[in-house]
Image (cartoon, rainbow over all chains, first blue to last red; front, side, top):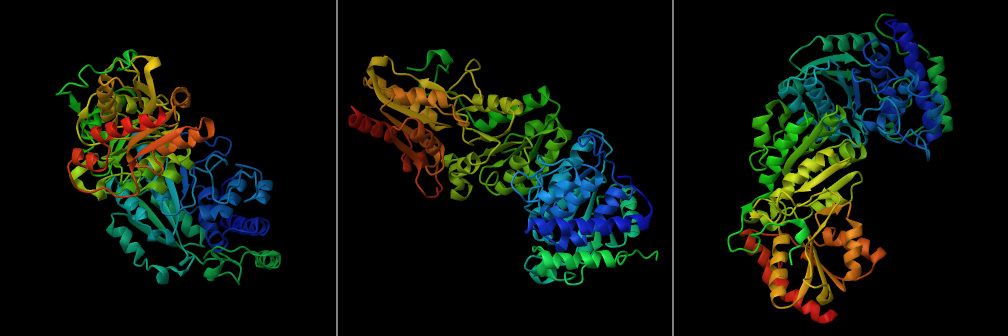
Length: 285
Length: 334
């Protein structure tokens, strides 16, 4: 898949990715729904908006940028993106969570191309990204490490250990993209474990923080480019998103965090995505 | 008699044997490893001097990462470093690593198949006065259940030095168990050491006079078992003592050979009996060569403060207790 700076094209692609997620989850019958749907623009911007340095035909290219998905339950989104990027055939998406599939319920590094780390237990992806950033710096390789995280995993002490270490080493080759969708399994983040003021917390830990509308592709791409130009500090981009984005009965409904649509719900979701094609627009329109 | 093929130390039974802690041997070995391989990096969680990783820090400051008291982060950062081609060695006390960071070791190192060497020091009762909170008695159980992770328990400082060098070249991640207190140097530069290999340190003087009792032990307690074997030999009782440093994978050939020659096996370790070295042996032998076994270690309790030797005695793992027990067991099998 080519990258493009045509926002309309990217928006269309984001809609297609959402449809892929729904189709995949209907067949898988289990998995996570709301988070992946809400974070689509972050991945589309990164992989197809001209940001990420990668080669699907050479997944171990030493100079590639690294992508660490810290919240492995975003697997349906990750796989839809990787298939779109050409790491494997889109047909594989039908096998998610099935016996013998390369698409494990949570990504397994050694089962599927394009996945840098096995993940599932949250709160430890950022540490791995920090390790990669340190290793790349030692070797003088100028690749960027992107860590995509959920907001709920900021409950984990391990996350803050990694945040401290990244600042200590001034890892400007590290960009964290936080999907601030305000939900986690047991409810809204601010009820389960208040995270605010998240921006100020990162800043107090020595990071540069950018905040964007997580459904505005142009804003996200601008922030990702800006992050590359910031030196001496690691950068966190807080993407404010709506969980379940694009499907009216899923939006803002935390019960859809770890739930999949049945056939009827799935068909309704696809109908909404198809007919509302372009509902999620950037501020350009 | 001491196995003559292994060229073990000559002063093992002297009143004043040469003493050195395993952590010192490890610290020296780590520097050597760093010299031999530019990809070796070291991470430590605020106990660099304790683990003698300060030697590596001074020699290779750019390849040393001080993580602060953050063992979970340390394990997962090491996984990330490994993904860029580095060979990370992470060090802390056993209770914290692999104790506190077990899930990070499981997911980011083992499941991810990123090669990391995990060094847990201050294990067993050996750490003494610090008390139960710091005495890792569960680390073998925690590590030997993890796929893609080898487990080694060296018996002296020289083996610890050789073990870290071997671990660098080993195909999977490795857990290396160390102790704090100076302990007798049992081996020499010439004594072989391999990760997959356990060694018979003490042989019956005459094979036809073998009592039929073999002790499998590891770590510091190898020296206690050797003293027992030596004293018993003077009383005309011949036993076998195996330094079972290869905990995972087990040296199955050696274990089977001696199980077949023996009527009873005693295991001795500074670890919970449940899940430890004796447990690993009994799992293997119950399937492959069922044999009477006596498993000595800590029985479902925590330790406490006291000098290392006092604790070894209190928990019945010392030479005198072992000797009395072995004599009694031999009467049961002859």
